[in-house]
Image 1: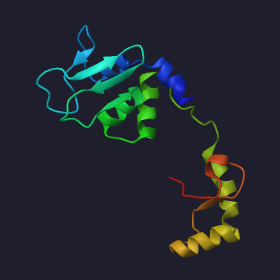
Image 2 (image 1 turned 90 degrees about the vertical axis):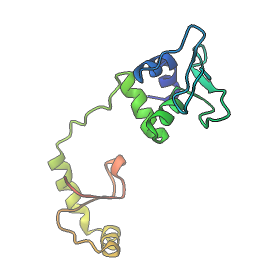
Image 3 (image 1 turned 90 degrees about the horizontal axis):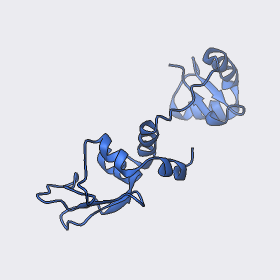
Length: 146
């Protein structure tokens, strides 16, 4: 799902409600990012954005994804994952048999590129796989089964 689609579907109010934050009728609340005695945090429902007007705060302005980043103290990727969770969108669970996949990858461990990598890292090729081609999300990866 594209970030723009997430932003279209996830309102700033939904995000705030998730964190137990409820703006007043004017869209104001005490800022969750600094010690705020009076409401200085404004939300704009039409644009799904926020702004903290306090000079004591580094939150500044942003959208629902940036709010999650700040609140969770995480990076953009983790914030997008959290936003998807709030929308009840979960990644598809692969249906592949991982044992079969790893057996294929194990056969590739003899490639020169894999051998050179393992040697540089001081790793032995026991129970390690290598994906030269095929599974695009594992391309040129050394794979350790868990």
